[in-house]
Length: 280
Ligand SMILES: C[S@@+](CC[C@H](N)C(=O)[O-])C[C@H]1O[C@@H](n2cnc3c(N)ncnc32)[C@H](O)[C@@H]1O
Image 1 (cartoon, rainbow, N blue to C red):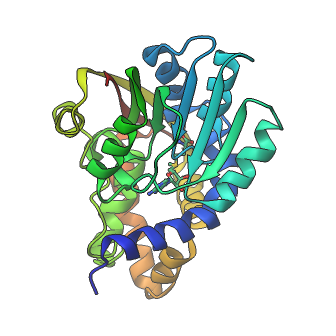
Image 2: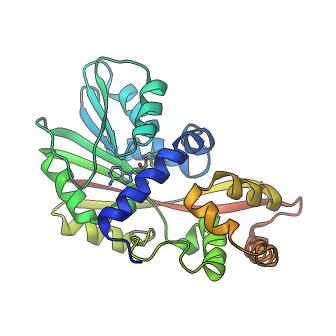
């Protein structure tokens, strides 16, 4: 069955509610690998003291926290996400502050009474099935002098941490990514990202490319953590495979990691990230 936008968002919200605690611990709260982008994003979008900022799809609040430190007590920051669990973690992790708020909203369906100086969105634009709708909401929430800062992962061949597994799994489980899901690397090139942002009416668009590195340990660690961290709907599909299929799948993944494996057995993946800034 093909998912429509609303089914996809429901499913994705459930997944994020389940994985948010693991995501926070393993990724977001450590500035390693792709998360070196948090500081870069804030630098590039040039947030100033006293700014009013929206961090859209804030997840567990890692970008939000750094923004709040940057705007200081005279500024104001709102972190917004559809996942109630992520927002709970964000609130706890950031602590109570009079100029920091976290709200549950859908990026495709929001409006605020106040207008923002800056809107940031890290690693989420590709999750919005109707990204244009989200971008138009962002633009409507900005002051005329406002700016946006958006980070996305590069296309799949530039992020082998994802593609080594995904390209292999989909050979064994063709509906691992359910039909109707948006393609998560559709904004993974400079031109595709720029085009999408320009279509929504933004100007002065600049995209910078970064290649970070991330070591998931040796192959066995990479594989073990994959099994440990995936959400239930995906785990169920894996569990339905025969033992021999799992063995074949693991071997296929291993082959894809060989080119990134060092002499001591550690894998070191390159990880391309694009960071876009633009004006209203
Ligand atoms: C990879 S996480 C990024 C979180 C955070 N920006 C960070 O850098 O750690 C993606 C986030 O997008 C959120 N998300 C997905 N679809 C959304 C939507 N339609 N509206 C708002 N948030 C959404 C998820 O709940 C998740 O927290």
